[in-house]
Length: 121
Image (cartoon, rainbow, N blue to C red; front, side, top):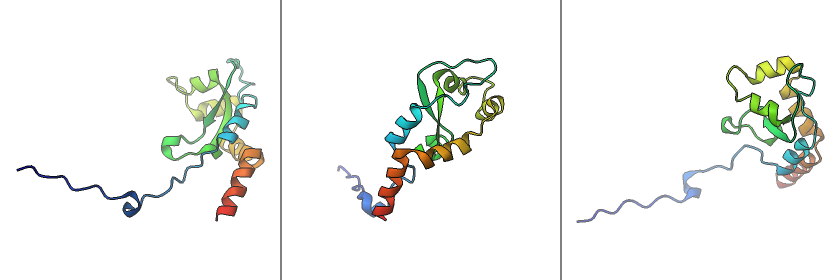
């Protein structure tokens, strides 16, 4: 006799929430248009193009409100052995979190996103 597997519950019944992470492609494009935060690094020179770097990773719940502009070379450096975000911040003299907050506040796409969220609430 063949046993049937129970049917899966529908998503709305399982209590699945909307993700709390902000997804704003316009803000990422805005950040990508800016200069690298580490352009004054003493030994490593910048290399185009720019990449938006998430201060708090997307896997850890970070959203697009927490991105800063880094060139490809400095962004790749963060994945190299012996390098971390704290070390790069110290060498460049920049606090990535504060810069990300400021960029989210002044970004035209960020302003539009927040206004849309206010209307929806």
